[in-house]
Image (cartoon, rainbow, N blue to C red; front, side, top):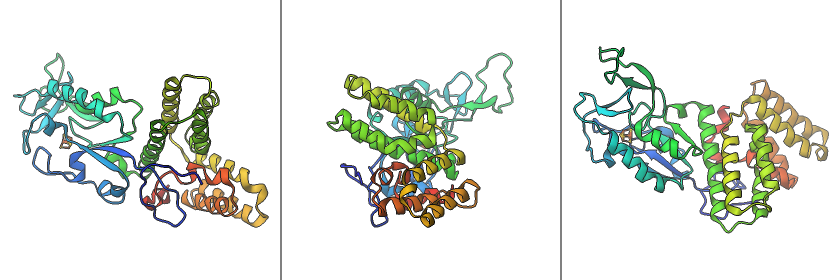
Length: 336
Ligand code: SF4
């Protein structure tokens, strides 16, 4: 089985694949730092629990970094994009945008970012926006709409569009949580490859290991990354890196629903089925069917395929990252 060469996380099961150690930025309050406007925190159980030891954290509190202490006056977004205190007496927009522009350089090397929802600095989506005095806007103090994005988060997203980003609240959804963590670990594997003295054949091998993962997320992205990898020896290195990185990130950003997972599982069974006896082939096919019908979680057919691929030394299948995309003890596929 192919293994990464960098610092790796602990693994929970004998024989489990070693995984890279992603670099994950996070709104500091989610790790329990008392930096909120009211002097409190918003500690997140998943981030500070099962995920905590598997990643290197880069905590960022933009409001503290622009010199506001805790506690401090609460802030809000306006429809003109400004970040102001609730009473309107202070405008921190310029300072916040300048901080984001300074921080973007340090954050380029990340594998993901978890942002605090509902924050006018860190929130990614659906933030209340308040009137900025334009004609026709309501004047009763209530939000004009809920289409805002935090000022710091907006700048980071615009500068790093391929970076996996998610809000804490959405990570409570098992499907969104698994998808985000899968993208983060895949991003870390590719970052480590491109940080090494890689050769075109290394990219081809990387791509080969990720084929089923790409197929499960985006059949078109699977084909596009395949086209890029096939020409790996013909393009300048920087051009190849940029092209593959973008196509890889775009493909994995696609949502892998039950139908696409079933397709990937059936592909994997197709690779090994002829070499298994009828009983074992039927067991795997039954598990895939149960998953497709919603009667078994994804972890069931995955465990069977892994077991047989590793036990029978089907190297191509056993090496597929799709079967083991992140540390097993996160248990993320038991709820899909
Ligand atoms: S949401 Fe962002 S700005 Fe607010 S306390 Fe948390 S890290 Fe700081």
